[in-house]
Structure formats: structure tokens, C-alpha cells
Amino acid sequence: MGIERLIKGRSRDLGGLTVQRLLPAPAQQMVGPFIFVDHIGPAELLPGAGLDVRPHPHIALATVTYLYEGALLHRDSLGCVQEIRPGDVNWMSAGRGITHSERSPAAERVRGVRLHGLQSWVALPDGQEDTAPEFHHHPAASLPAVSLGEAELRIIAGEAFGRRSPVDVRWPTLYVDILLAAGGRLDLPPEYSERAVCVVGGEIEVGDIVVDAHSLAVLASEETITVRARSTARFMFFGGERFPTPRFIWWNFVASSRKRLEEARRDWAEGRFAHVTGDDELMPAPKS
Image (tube, rainbow, N blue to C red; front, side):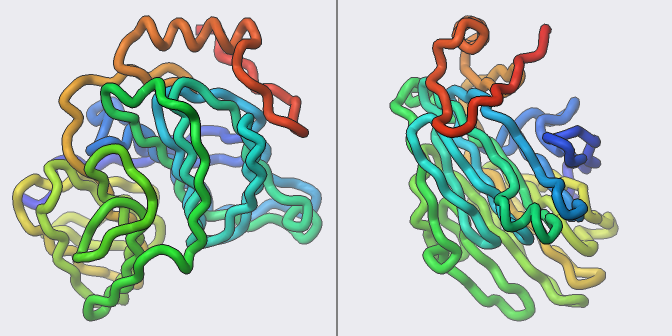
């Protein structure tokens, strides 16, 4: 069987840059705790231009930024200022509420921006949606690396292939960056109830189905899945245990109740979220 569902990215504008949105999709809201996945680039912007995601709010989720090329400057309402580079992890847990921005650093704008990466949201589990907000940066060198035949793996979050990431997760989580040489193959174990692969470069095969860049394949549960690389391919293997309760999503907010979404909507409209120091260009909420 192999693949249960194949999802193609849908174009969205993200602060002057077109991205491919993979989750949520009409037929698939979540994979494990992951409720949002954007594939950014690869994109090149002329000198002077850059990515500008203005200050905006989140609740009850963790944002996960992971880059393959380029750099981004994170600022948030906790006072954290952190540049992220390829292979690093910025993990921001919004809890009861946080505001942040992500922009291209000044040095990148001068020489011209090349940006490629994934932006994901992980829903916080019941009982932890209103915890205090936190931000943690994990340099690339701190993440476990694994070599398996023709595959090079980096464990971004959770536990996989016998290694555990230092990133603090609140729910059984799978997040692994995989580079597979052309013609190579890799077995993906059934250690979690929900799993998917998101291809960011090249092409892979699962059975007789080809999965190319800007595509996400939800994998069949409870079986080992063999992936073959038609060309040198890079993909994210991600998921985790199935959430026992549903999640609702509106704009940048995720919650287990519609009432909480409405409260957050009013709080942003009425200026009750904390501001980002040094970045006051707020993002307006949609009208509906």
C-alpha cells in the first residue's frame, strides 16, 4: 500500500515570497502533532529585497523553522533575537500567547537573498495550550546525525533511528531531515501512528508512486515503508502519535476550542498581545 494520500503544495504569499502550503490540506488537517507545513523556496530575491513576515500572534502551538539555504532573523515578544542558519532549529512554543516576526537579515539583503526551508507548526497537547511562551534555539551541531547506507539523517525533534533530539517536545514527535543519494533506498520504520514525507528537492519513489518537490505523502500506518531516490533527494520524515482530540485553526491561531480562537482574535484586535521590541509593523488579522 505505502501511500495513503498524496498532497500537492498550494501557492501562498508570505511577506513578498511565494511558498507552497502542504498542511493543512482539504483532505488532511494534521499528521501527528503537525498542523501546518509551508515549503519556502528555493527562491532568489534581488539585492535590497528580502522576506518580511511582520509581527503576528500565535497561541497553543510551537513554530519550527528549519532552513536548507539562507538566513532569517527571529524577534519575539519575550525579547529573543536570534538569527537562524541552515541546519539550526528555532523552536518557539506560543502557549497562551506570543508575538514574533521573521525577516531577512540586513547582510542577506545587501548581497541578494537565497532562501529555502520549511516552516511548521506543532499543536500543543491538551493541558499545555495555556503554558507560558518559550523560545529555544538549537545549533545544527547539537542535533544528532545518523548515516544509514546511502542516507544521511539529522534528527530535528523527537526520537528516531535510535537517536533522540535535544529539542523539548510536548507530544510523541517525529521530525527527521534526510538526504538520500540517487539510486539509494531507505526503510522508514512504523514507530509512530502517523507519518509523512515532504520532498524538498529531487524525487523519491514509494512503491510505484513518484513524490517530487513541493509534495507531501501521508504514509500507511503500521508498516515499514521503503523509499527509493530517483535522483539525489532531500525530504523530511515527520509525524508522531495521533492527537486524541480535534484542533481548530484560524489565521495564526490553533486551539482545542473555537471559544479560545475567538478570545485570541479579540485580544489581537484590541492590542492585548505583547509587542516585539524593535519591530512595530504589526500584521493585520483577516476580516473573516
